[in-house]
Image 1 (cartoon, rainbow, N blue to C red):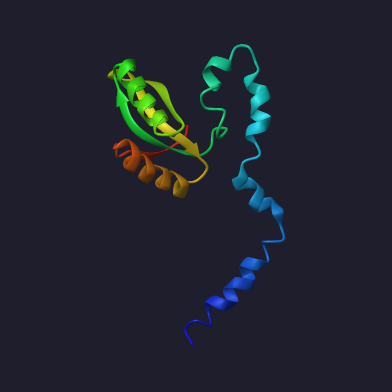
Image 2 (cartoon, rainbow, N blue to C red):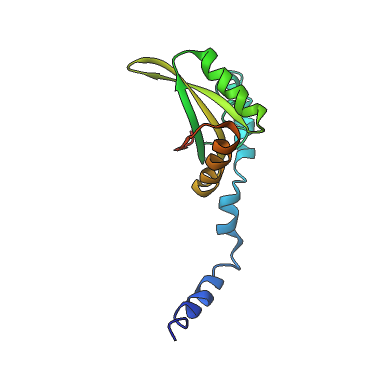
Length: 133
């Protein structure tokens, strides 16, 4: 008889389903409007790496952060050779410039956790799920 209370919860979940608006938000149709903004001459070099997958929203798997860009590029290339969408992001810290190697981005934390496991298996690097950007 304990299984009966979850069943009434299902019709409550069924009520929002006819509304397509909540389902449309996770699909992220908004990256397309962000692309014309990237066409501004002053911004393409900065926004191009982040724009293709998710317009400022989502998660990425960070594989490492390096002081030397060559080290970061080598790990990025290893991840790309394994079939992942990898990129290097430069950040300024109190200790100087770091080059973060990240894979993704993806829309949800669950997807990022799955991606982290795939990268660990194929590239041999245990990454960390981080918000993106």
